[in-house]
Image (cartoon, rainbow, N blue to C red; front, side):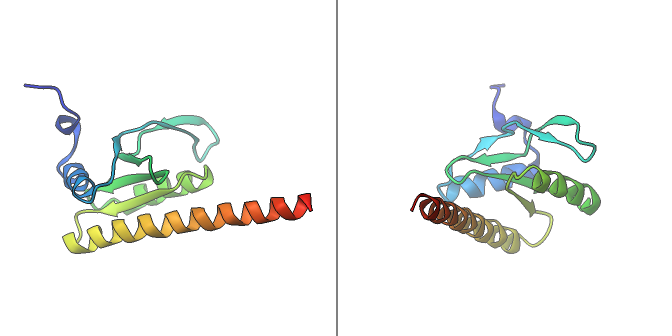
Length: 126
């Protein structure tokens, strides 16, 4: 059997990878990020997908483990790492719409932040 990244994925992750690919979005699987956890200890996390064109990570939630996902979301937020949590076990159309709309939303937020930084820097130089 040929070793493939797809062999390492869960069924839910394969659904998301297929959808991202179908949508024309380039992704990397389990791209490492170094974070500080809730105890401020340095850890390496491997979010399911990294979308380099958008600077976003995607965590695939294939089961109903809300407390664990909430804990991870707080850690990513604390480390300023933008992550979209996708719940594939919910209605298929809903998670797909949620994923794409959040890619757009988070990209616009990053653009607005960059624009604000540029304006503030220009004002300081004036």
